[in-house]
Image (cartoon, rainbow, N blue to C red):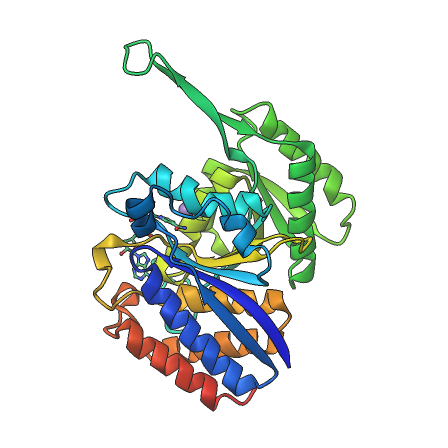
Length: 357
Ligand code: NAD
Ligand code: MN
């Protein structure tokens, strides 16, 4: 029997609701599979802790997480705490502290879920967005001068390194190579941004030589949004910078039906540190406490976590259960149903128990 140590950080808003649902599904998988067990430790980090102590996570937080096999994260953000404080106080220190440089965001239309795109159904939209997760526009560099005066200046510096771009490019080409279509789209904005973005294009062309069996093309990020909407079938694997992929993957989630189904994995491909798995969505204040948060994104990222841990059978079983439940019409309101988080979760657990793959 294999044992995995999981750190759960439910954090804010609907985070605790969807993480509880995810843990319930993981327990059902554990019982159904019998070959592994998950030892889950919960951390009460987040905005509530910030209000009490002035910090979202303890100073030695990274040290505390180091020994875990994976981190299962909810969402962070509260109406009374500035968003840059919550993001830089918890999520980014973990991603950057553990050098989780590959952010992997699969998107496809699940059976029973409708895309806002007319005539686009399951099979027509099956993408993986790879987001550079360690540098670029979110490197945290910049500053403000003459604060509050008419001549005030604010800078937000994007930093791209050859090492950083090369490793994410290799990761994306490798992922594209493993998918049936072996096709990668590299997104930049190298017409207007003529330094780091041109370097992206050059490094893409260099790394492409290592993957002769992968077909690839280039897009400017603005045109890419149009292609995603107009020609979803023309895309497969996508790689973009931290900022660009952040935006494109939210769009991808919406085109696949709802932000409530979109998962993400923050991966350290070298496995020096724990990787972190979370739904893409935020803390969703508007529905917090109502019991209607869609748990599908969290189930999907739990499946990514199992895959990463080396439990592909359980990962597949979970996605199969999720798809069966979506198809049966047991859905939360954001995807056109009237089920609660609990009803969807119970149905997924039941499908896991009944599954025979
Ligand atoms: P959000 O993702 O929280 O919500 C956007 C919209 O999508 C809302 O209408 C919400 O109800 C809906 N939605 C999101 N997840 C859903 C789910 N699982 N089921 C059903 N509906 C869902 O984004 P926002 O409103 O821009 O941000 C709210 C807070 O979350 C902010 O503080 C923001 O900084 C934070 N945030 C955190 C993360 C993160 O932790 N990774 C990501 C994005 C936003
Ligand atoms: Mn985002």
